[in-house]
Image (cartoon, rainbow, N blue to C red; front, side):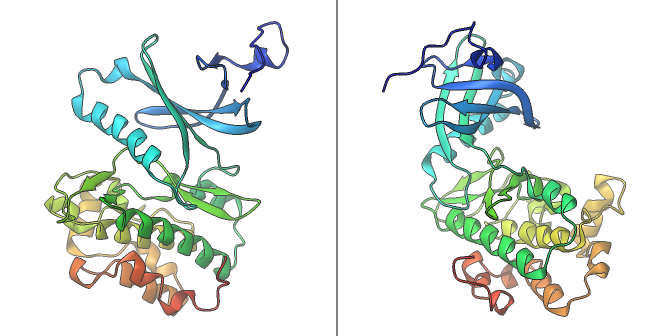
Amino acid sequence: MPYLKFNPSDKDAERFVEVDSKRRYGRYSDLLGVGAVKRVYRAFDQEDGIEVAWNQVQLRRFFDDEDMMERTFNETKLLREMSHENILECYNVWLDEEPETLNFITEVCTSGNLRDYREKHRRVSIKALKNWSRQILRGLEYLHTHEPCIIHRDLKLNNIFINGNTGRVKIGDFGLSAVVDSSHVAHTMLGTPEFMAPEIYDENYTELVDIYAFGICVLELVTREIPYSECDTIVKIYMKVSSGTRPQAMNKVKDPEVTRFIEKCLAKPKERPSATELLKDPFFDGLDDDA
């Protein structure tokens, strides 16, 4: 398909600070987000005429860190393999030898991450919160039943995105994800402390750690409070999590149904249900099938 020629004198084209070698994608300077490894910019797909997200990793920063390099390439590989309405879609990936950057194009969610969206919109019905929660679970079910199984390992509201005009929720940021064999067991201690299940600290866990993190996400959605915010150090968070002490935010949950559902997600690994089982929970009774 022919492309419009990239002409630096064109007023629209001048807004691009970078284009890919095929002149399909143009990157703007506007930052959508910054992570430990990558920067995410607003961009435009000139072929399809849609806005996209341009994810860029400066590889030279991590040449001496093999683990970080592996995780970075792992994320792009996983994204290209996955296809689900509640998983962020990846359109293209390429490596630029000069200036040593890994670039990948993903869909852009118009309203950003779910933490910021929930903070912006404080009056949200329990029905809407259940709808978002069910979509997250559907994404987790896809990951956990994928062949091979994928454990996200860093599920939190900053890594879940939403299109505010449709209410569609999508899981993203797979930089810490693990692909596991038939045993479904992983051993590396990774994640965000507030959302890490106790068994992660023992470095012997399965995909059910994502269910624990999901329960913490539901708690944050309901209370608008980052879990364990009463702790001022990671050590204190670890001590509470490892002893089974719930975040103080649990005291703010007034609906017994919500409390029961969250507790079910935070149960000990052997008692913790799978995503498939949770999707059948009475918590979601009454929601429209297509919600």
